[in-house]
Length: 359
Image (cartoon, rainbow, N blue to C red; front, side, top):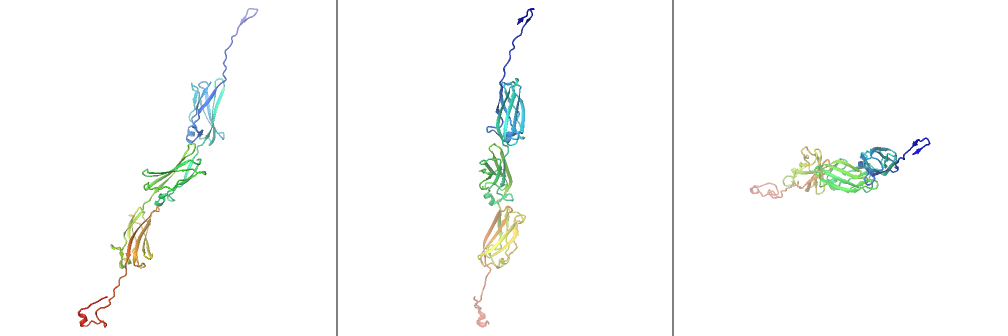
């Protein structure tokens, strides 16, 4: 205070000011996981949280995700009473795969700015394709294909050495499973598998893989398993004795049945003798699975052993056969060497009394 000569007094008081130069922000979790790579799942809902010091509650925190092409996803939140903060989960679908910077910024009431950032990556793409599942063009595993089903394909965005799991699942949920590794060029092949543990019917072939970032990829084929076809010769025309006599050999009719073979499929019946002479004839499987070939003449075959064989294939390519081991006996002769009539071929009274004929 002060007094002038006239007696006027004046005074002033000292004001107490505050020095505030520190504010910090820390990103505790940026949603990319321990590996610092946003996979497809993480990138769909990237949640970032952290803490501040020296920043008043209610101050705005701005979090940005910036990719290598400067595309930005930005979101704001508020500092909590204890200095913590958390932003709502964000979709990073607007960013391109590659480097991503996650940055959090805040200012305190005094105007001090603080920031923290993480250098992460975005890896959202992994694909797998089955090129061949071993079922052939028709998508049906026949008996031969099912004995050694080999599956192969390719991947994109999947690192070499990652595990591909291939499963074959039937309609009763029986499963055949096998693993292999992704090659340097992204291709993969599993060893040939036997599907004997599966039942005929629908079969799903599925290939699954994950990349290092954790992105999963699958591909599947809806196939079928058809391993059973049978054919039976019910009658081969040789009679109960299994020997074609001259009459039977003149019109040998063969008939039988099939199971697991579609109507209209071709049945081939062959008659083969001991010298490999063959008589062959075709017919069609009927609606009820039965078949009959037209009567055949076996005159070109030689007497002796004869094999009658019936063969058919179903649409899946399964082959079936049945055969009978028969005989062919068409020759019989008789010769009279003495008819009792003497050299003159005239029976006299004596010769005619008792006639002895030999041959």
